[in-house]
Image (cartoon, rainbow, N blue to C red; front, side, top):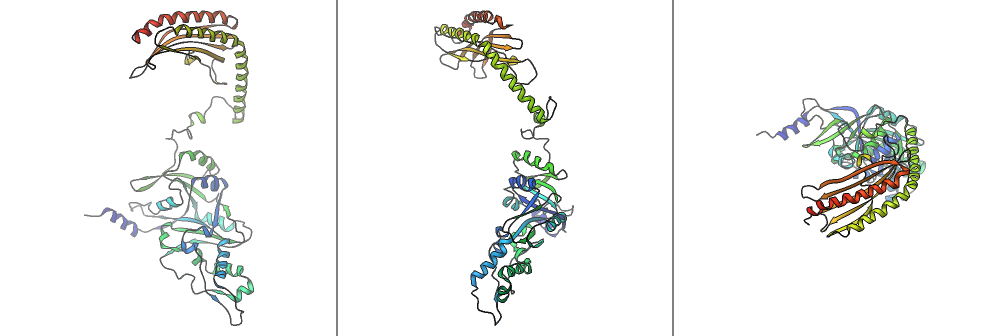
Length: 471
C-alpha cells in the first residue's frame, strides 16, 4: 500500500523552489496595529534579545600580542566587554523568506512565508496575531537609505543554518590594536569582519524560520525604527485573529490603500489563505446597517451637535411637563393606593404598588430625543399588582399612566390585565383598556373618570381571576 503522506513529503522535498521577492514579519496584533502600522515603521531590536544560544551567548575569540606589547590582564573581563560592545550597539530585524512551488505540487503553499505554524506559535501570539508582507527590494532600500544618526555599519542577508560551528574561529583580537585604537573600535571592526559568523549563522534547529535579517550597528543603545510605508504589500490575519481587533486594524490600514488583507484558516492540517472579507460578519464591530448609515444629513460634528441639542431640548421639555403634571401624579398615587387597600381584603393575595408606565401600550411610549415621530415630553404612572398565593401562578394588574404631549395636551391610559403562569408559556389577557386625550386643564376630571372605571373593571375581572385560581 502506498503511504500517501510519505509521497506528499517526498514531492515537497524534491520539487524545485523559487525564492520570491516577498519578506514576512510575524508579530502580535497589538504590536502590529498600534506600533508598526500606526507609526509606519519597523523596529530593529537589540541583538541580545535573539533566542538561539549561538547568538545570545558570547563568542570568545583568541587574544594575541606582539612580543613588545606590555602584558595585559585580558581574560573573561576583556572578552565580556568585547561582546557587550557589539551586542549593546547591534540591532536586528528578523524576517521570513518566501518560497514558491510549482502548480503540480499538491501543497504548493507549504513553504510560503506566511505558512509557518511554529513561527505563528512563537511570534504570532498563537495565531491571534498578524504576518506582515513586504516587498524585499523596497524594504532593503528603505533600510539602507534611512537617515540614522551615528550609524556605523549596516548589512542584510539570509541566515545560514548549521549543525556544527567552530565557535569564534581562528581569528582573534590583537592586544596592540586594543591599546592603540581602543576596545570599542576593535569590537566594531571585529563585528564587521566576522558579521556572517556573528549575525547570519544559526543552529539548524531554527532552519524552519528561513530567516532574512537587517542588521545595524550604531553608537546608541536604543532601538531604531525605519519607514516601511512604501514596502508594505500585505497583511495576513492569523487563524485565531480576534474580531475585537478588526475595527482598529481596518482603521489603521486606511493609510495603506494599496495593501491587501488576507485571512488564514486552518483546516485538516492545512493552513489556507483567503482574501479578507467582512461581508459575512454580523458582530457589532463591523455591522454597517446602523453604524454607517443615518437619516440625518451632515458631518459627524454637525450630527453630534444636533443630537446634543435634541437631548437638551427634551430635558427642558421633560422638566416643564413634569412640573405641570406633578399634582395630578400625586392624586393618581393616592388613588392607586386606595385600589391596593381595597384589594387587600381579597382572600389569598399579596398586593404591591409600583411606579410604572405599564398602562401605556408599547407603540405609544416616548421615543428617544431627536427621533422623528410623536413627541411625548413626559410620561409616568402607577400600577397595583395582585399576586395569587402561592406566588407565580396567577397575577392581576391594574394600572394608570399619564403622558404629556405637545401643545399642553395630556393622554391618560388605564388598563386591567391578567397573567396566568403555564408550563408552555404564560397567558396574558387584557381585561379592560381605555385611553383619553384631553387638554392639560381637563386632566384632573379625566383622571378621576379613568380611575373610577378602573375600579369597575377590576371588580368585573375578579370573578375570572378567582375562577382561574380555584376559588
